[in-house]
Image (tube, rainbow, N blue to C red; front, top):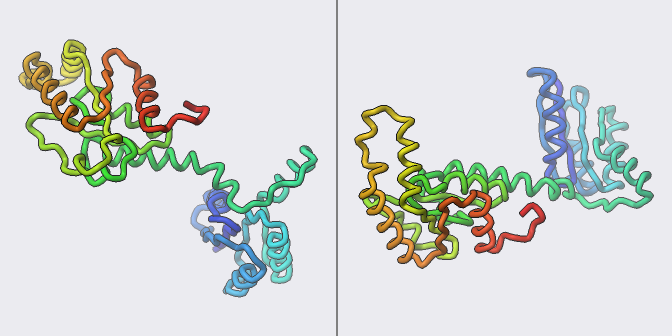
Length: 271
């Protein structure tokens, strides 16, 4: 059994990913342990001295601090431990090509990847709280979309999540009580989605075509029912005094842009 220690002067995310990629090629013969925040000689000595089995291990390091990185290599040579620093050669080559001294700052790689992980967390948030699966997410959301069925709430949430925005949606139905949590959040986070009744009826009819004939008895696309729902939603949105967007024939991207401008999320070149 081989143990790979992913050692870093930051959180160790990059070192661990490289270690796991390595271990995945050797079935169950390799295990990975992350060792973050090794930022001084004392940290290096403590780490090395606490290693019980120094024979069946290797170290993958992403330590940026030059003196700490070199001291770790020195200690590993003394103890006969195999070590590789995945950043050292890359940093040296880039420095040579650019003829510049690098900014040896721990955590720089994680900061570079932080936007990516922010998007992942937002995507997970959108899926977890879609269609009011759990109202506990309302107080943690950046944006809360309220609207009738088939007003593009879920696609909008997923699009916003791809921008790193934690969005959830609350479907409106006259028979379903409004979550109490909605009355406790900043109203600026609430976005009401409305739509032309004729377009909504057509969308719902198309949706019903995918179900069996017995489902046609549902008043889902009934004109009177749709108008009743729209009136209910309109009164509720005015009660919240929230931003209202008409999504009739409006692209998801356009609606999302309006939302991002409303919550002050515009500024990145991606937008």
